[in-house]
Amino acid sequence: MGIASSQQNNCTAGKPMIEKKIFANGFEYLHVSNQSAEAEIALQGAHLFHYRRHGDSPLLWLSSLSHFEHGKAIRGGIPICWPWFGKHSSNPNLPQHGFARTAIWEHVETKEKDDSTTEITLQLKETPESLSLWPHSFCLRLQIIVSETLQLRLITTNCDSDNFVITSALHSYFGVSDIRNVRVSGLDQTPFLDTLTMQREVQDGDIRINQEIDRVYQGVANSLELSEDNRRILIQNEGSQSSVVWNPWIEKSRGMSDFNNDGYQNMLCIETANAMEDERLLAPGATHTLGVIIS
Ligand code: BG6
Image 1: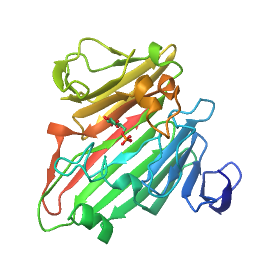
Image 2: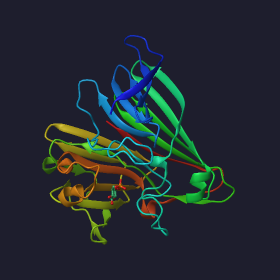
Image 3: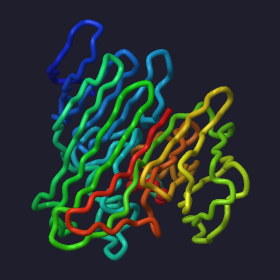
Image 4: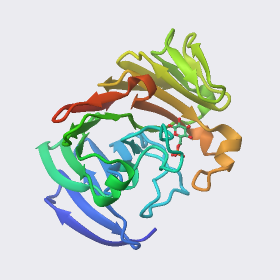
């Protein structure tokens, strides 16, 4: 899609740079670049859809059929699932994975800590529309640190006069060369719910993928590793005891209009979550942080 206009802040040759860009349909995003990496973040959903360390290939998978359109979640990158993960627990008509990924967030702060480290903060607060879906006042902040590592911290504050419960996820789509060569370690002996069969099982060894997978692991340790050939990605979670591992494989890929038919071969979601039993109850004024450092 063509870029209609672009507004540059703080641009000096060789120095960190943030540019606000707009697709021809009005869809806005930030282009961040510094001496270690570059990233792109849509204001819809505070959705980071590209990150690449200079000299490396992109870290995250992004479907070439993805919509960059208001009201439709981007397929790839790191969608923010909030204030519920997956289907709503009591109302199937509410949007899957909550409303934060299709809401328009505000870019509230940029900190250029040094030439190689840029911190961007985006914020979402309740609106009449959010209150019609979820009747609570909240302040949600996403801090993204673009540096040699990629760091995200999703900070929920309860601004209501009642408790509320959230489930959520940083729904990372990792790009891989060939899904059949991928190994996920760090979950050996971890219990999981297989949401395809609704059976509860326990992981035995590393995860290898040769068919559809959709699992919610519980009691997850802080560090997971995705590896293939000579590449290793370390995923360090904060404020999370659950992880979701998802690959739609052949049939489900074909059933999604924004997913390339063979896209399943080049992606794997490993999601840093507060899902199912790992839901969080926040009292008025309380804050919870769900974070990930990817290196
Ligand atoms: C995963 C879920 O987190 O997200 C899957 O475990 C789901 O069940 C997938 O299919 C994609 O969801 P969506 O709403 O982005 O198509």
